[in-house]
Amino acid sequence: MSHTILIKNATAILPNGRALTDLIVQDGIIASIDTAATSRADEVIDATGLVLFPGLIDAHVHFREPGLTHKEDLRTGSQACAAGGVTSFLEMPNTKPAAINQSLIEDKYRLAATKSIANFGFYIAATTNNVSELAKATGVPGIKIFIGSSTGDLLVDDQEALERIFAETQLPICAHCEDETTVRQNQSRLGSELKLSDHSKIRDEKAALIATRRAIDLAKRHHHRFHVLHVSTAAEVPLIIDHANLITAELCPHHWHFNVDDYDRLGTLIQMNPSIKTRSDNVKLWQALLDGQFQMVVTDHAPHTLEEKNQAYPNSPSGLPSVENYFSLLLDRASRDECTWEQIASWTSDAPARVWSIVGKGRIAVGYDADLVLVDPNEVRTIENHKQFTKSKWSPWAGLSLRGWPKRVFVGGRTVYRDGQIVTEQPAARLQFDHALGGYWKTQNGVGPRKVLRTRSNS
Ligand SMILES: [Zn+2]
Image (cartoon, rainbow, N blue to C red):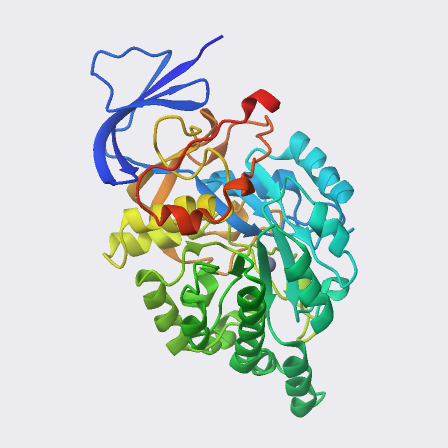
């Protein structure tokens, strides 16, 4: 049976800018915008004073399922999404087992289809010898390569293996770029008595720069769409400025928010790979985001238990949870005129949808899915560990007060979060990727409505 929702008097962040408007959702799809005042609906929501954003798409999370579910799982991770205005996520393959072939990818989709209250997609991981699996993979946003990282089996550092992955596959590739040789050299130079601040000396600017340069060189020579994950240094910015429309890049909140001076205060909570860098990097990376040199903001949400994080360095794991707070970190900056709502919508929704070719997502436009967030731009709230929805129950931003929070979140027209509560257990949907059009970034250039491709018929 048809169900309609009328959202009245919202300041909606539309593709061409903000507008005070009414919006009708019918059966989970945005049916009309700027609706006549007389329109009727099954449910009417008065959004006076609220801002309507397209649901966020966090294109880089680690939800730890299967295999590491004491840290997070698809239920708690997706609840944290909902609380943070994130209606879709793309999850990284370094679970246990790692998602290195179609069958393991489908296992994750099956799990998510029973547990995740946000829409979901899963990357496939490259290893040194699974190129045939990568070549035939379908239903994924792209291929993830760990070019020099601490993630065990998934490390691909061998040049011949990398050449084959770029030469013999079609899907977009993304990579964690920290050069393993440099990391090891730094480590042996610093000796065995390592302290936490050494983490940023081991995983230093040079390590990031070498690996990013190497990956971009591969992408250019093989003319392969490539996305640089979690750029951590200002020195990499000149490398990511678009080369023949092949290269895109992302920035994470911890890399503009934290720096080596924060180790004293926050300890291993901000131990990350790539490591956090200097105050100057914070400032320059944020400026590069404003300047359009990054397409998107993602979290790299990577939860560990507090017990795990509180081990002495270097036994402490790298990674921090952030999926439920990054929208408000951005909204707070907008409240201080450091960015605009339109930029936030572009970085967190439109760009991830276009970079990863996600069908029917990323903007408030007729025919798109009704993944929406009503924000109270004036609500001030302090982040508290015990109120976090992530299973890890902590945040490196605990104690920080931010202005601007999601008030009500819709996934496919259904309310999933409202006024501090998760209000559904119903699973959301598997994301659809349309790589056939290849390189939205190239053809769309950020202007005008994207062609909406519905794929309901084959579901
Ligand atoms: Zn990651």
